Image (cartoon, rainbow, N blue to C red; front, side, top):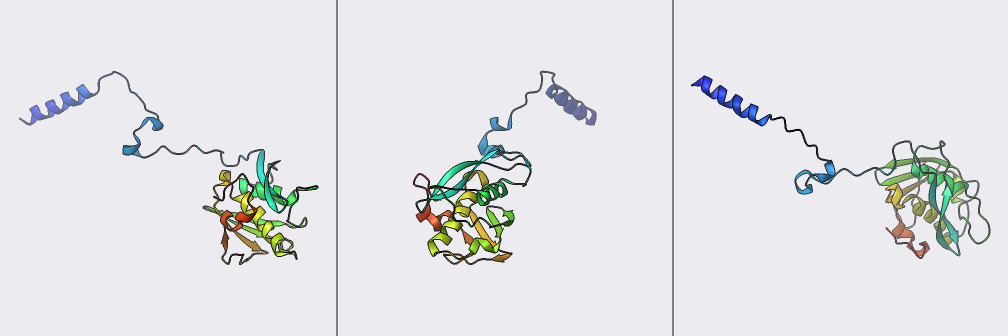
Length: 187
């Protein structure tokens, strides 16, 4: 009796192993309700930065988005490249920057959707309140664009976290909406 059961199981297994070929499905062809959504395709591979990026400059007390060449090989991440490009921007005419020219980026750390930015003390040098707010808005808008995956920014000066207006350590585009470019929302 036991031998009959073993032979029956063997026959079923052999029948299941027909040589009709194997069909492989792409992950995107699998039903989402059973297996979840496919993994997102990364827009850039680690260590690879785009050649061009958007930074936010100032025209008539509002931000304007401008495409600029990014420095390759100098930094490791898109947020760092964007911030370095913003700080080094030489402007003239109607489009300017509110950030003092001698400001130094001491570091950029990414913690999930938050960029932690450490600037030199020149960043907070004396200026009217609106000029100070424009400086912060330039940094926040440049770092929180869709390509970076960043939603909020924490700014430190020489390693000391700053209480920004409104009070709190994290700031988003919403706090600086009065400076938003006319054609962009406040994510």
